[in-house]
Image 1 (cartoon, each protein chain N blue to C red):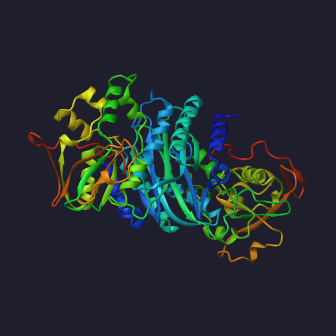
Image 2 (image 1 turned 30 degrees about the vertical axis):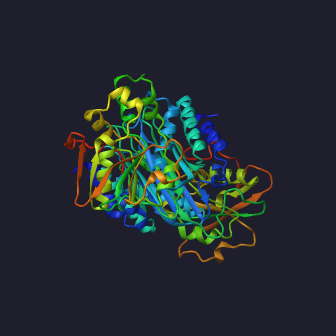
Length: 311
Length: 311
């Protein structure tokens, strides 16, 4: 067991309050409030050379994505800001935070600002608070027979990250998506009343689906050739099995993964124009994931996503 | 203007939602919920050699102290944990977090855990959520004529810090108080319905009182010789003017500073046995602080406390 797994198991043993949802749901639920906190660290979650405004945008967006996955409306945020004396960086970072807060109606209401020792990598955090509707879907409510739907596309962000890893000055639509993910708040609200289980795809579709299955006590069959890929992704990496496995494990997608009863067709729901909603598979009895495409079964890749990027 | 002041001014310009209370109140107030987030950084807010359980305790206690100053009951917390691969440290740190959460009835319900690059100083954060009573006192409601009361003592923690700065292996009651502050939740609840203004003393009594005065649009007269000092403090540093100025500016006290109308005597309130409540001065018209002791006026020290430790 890695340190991180051991620590998270220990936290689970402590977090016995029902609001914690066993620390298996990305969020805590307190009455109708949905609470989430995500931090990002320089050199781990973003490149030191990334434009600071994009780092600020992403910090807000990844937290809003957790609210989106619970069908919650943004209510308020607390920012945890660390300063290292580079005022130009910090000012630009705040521009990105403010732009995302304004775009999605998230009022910044507090937090704290601390100075770090010179040279220390920044750690930046946000607590986002949302208000859920009548139903706040957990990860663990999926049932065999439910259909698996994905809102958004997968692979773009991982494609952008791969480009940046090759060349920190890379630009283009995939890099843009990596740096400025869009939280799918409106689709989340539309799906939440119907979803038996819902979560956002942050660590990789397959690893996140595995977590949904484990929490729900079932397995899943996924059609790899059904995965929604963007034109920009296909132009860059193609759409063969290898490209699709890359997209299914890359992470940072902030797509929404939902289990819906067979009788519920999300295409009949009131979704924002242009929303990509795709049936990608089915929840089944038993456990584990089974992949297939037009050529037949596809062996599961050894790495399903980012194992321990967040809890 | 320092970078930190400039950044905080910028945040204030953005945080226009009433829940933010102008970022001048340590907390945000959302309906009857009181929200606060404080982070601590290795090498800045604690010594790398500090016992990790005490670091965990202190992180929880300083956040609870913000709730105490608003008369709020602890409801839930989100922990932002960074891992650097030292599992023994991290496990002991969690022991301290758990002990403080258990002592004060604060359920841990979420947060996140991220890995830092090897060697990066830790940044540890907590979001604490409380439920306020009918009245959630701000800093800015003080009026000339209100009496200034202090719950708890000042100087102990700064005395402990001074000992540790001399010798990182120092021990004793002052070091204990520095490492394991006690949030004054019950006194805060008792005072909140009566206080015109209330805050906790974290950066130094004089600097925090100055902030209370600025927010309230008034000044204050303080009797330096009335400041409550512990026996351990007096044994270590004496109680002359110099020792009292040290105590009044040292910070990390987590005492409660309250303005109460002249007709309200806090000694008549239902406070836990053994609570130290001391009248230390009066709010007056105008602005600024005026210090005095039995020998007459005392010049204000140049440094009133920690200028920018938190926002």
